[in-house]
Image (cartoon, rainbow, N blue to C red; front, side, top):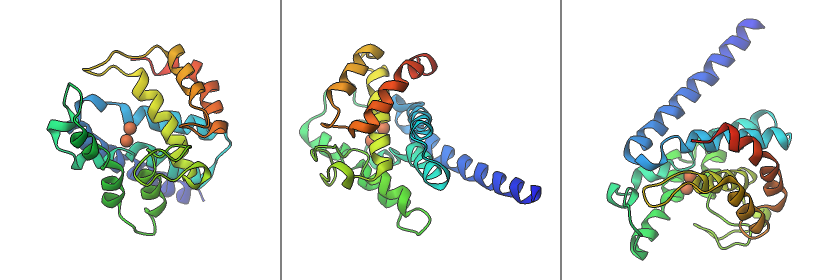
Length: 203
Ligand SMILES: [Fe+2]
Ligand SMILES: [Fe+2]
């Protein structure tokens, strides 16, 4: 029994280590997202705990959160690290990253759910997101959770072209976008967690 548990634990750790290596490959290329995937994975995990999402579903969401931007590996460095505004054409290329990520992860039985969550992490509750434009609960639950964590980290992180947004302002942005960009129920859970994250995740 204990041996089985240790075997299972080691296997899980092994997968987690491989995932973190993949993310390091992306971060070596995309200097501005250093630590982003880790923070999004931590926030998604906290939201799952709060929502009482357990077991395999929680593990899948956690892994997908680590991998959500892996498709940026396929975006030219010049666009990814461009300090100024992006042209329409460059922006269209950035918007391919969820689809590239989905294709990198593939369609195997084991990875199907993870790649689907990655594919839809930029969809919006109102259907105005990308790459497909699905809305509401058509969007996989994991993608709806990650979309909120992703936006919070993007807002509160410093980039070459912008300062880090104050957590209080970020909270207002999330509030404003309940039922617009974000699942309202999940957004409310994030609002509850923001005071904790503002202490734990400040750069
Ligand atoms: Fe993304
Ligand atoms: Fe992201």
